[in-house]
Length: 335
Ligand code: TXA
Ligand code: MG
Image (cartoon, rainbow, N blue to C red; front, side, top):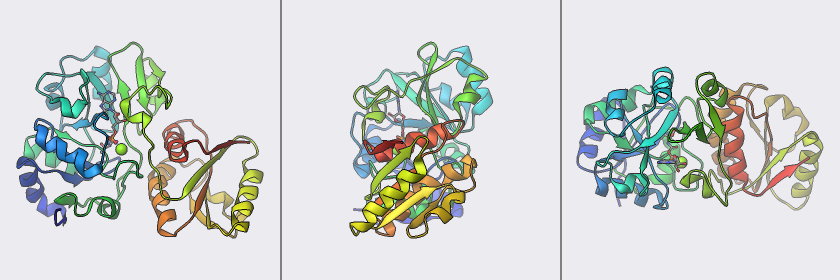
């Protein structure tokens, strides 16, 4: 057990010392909070898996402060990967490349590849630069729970399990980085995220490849994810409204507390439920920044069921719907 400290941006030196001593520290990135440890230290990395309760076969992303540091941990990178680094780093794009021997198997779950990115957050960059360590960091939530977009979320999941959290306020994107496997042609999109498929395809050929739960493309994709305590039901298709209303009534009649997640314009259609707003219709940035907070909020309000109004999968909608599908598991209603 740890007595977890919340550190301000002026107390970064405490976090740096902890990292250098082989401890793990939660820190903000531009996507979600990460739980970082020295990527070169197997014992430090083991503490990440322990604190999160994360399955050992799900590899971690290594966070670097610039391209040069990132290239120090990979064996080689194709020209197209260089183009993507130049265009999107620092930023929410993770590249999977062949790893160098110095990265311990604990980071990559024994794979011959390593996932690497340069986050676009001043505190994250400062921490990595000053500690002079690449940081292995998954999202700073308990395994299976929604990713944390503010310090309170990290606290709720990990207080007592880690020594410190660096407070950076709300994270900007709210969904995790895009994960792109650059070891195959065309490159494979393993997880949609902050950098959209459309943006990638302006520069390189990319094949969608999230795989299925039975045969995951990326080790992390086979696990139940982003789940609040409440039952999550995702409703998609042409007749969403009628199905939402029926479902809400049916659960309500059985004494269940219902929450509905939808664009703000639909608030008036659902007067008797907890309404979780995604923001103005088509504002994907706001929706992305809200989904994990809203899933946690439904739990805080003791909702039994969350009915989610599906949205378009264009642009950032692809990442949002991917996370909502995972939160819903098999509870997806096609209308
Ligand atoms: O935005 C983000 O990416 C956040 C912040 C903290 O940087 N991190 C994050 O990490 O989302 P995590 O551990 O929650 O997700 C990492 C994903 C998992 O799906 C994992 O399976 C995949 O990346 N991954 C990591 N290394 C891989 C590899 N060598 N090959 C294929 N997939 C890999
Ligand atoms: Mg995660």
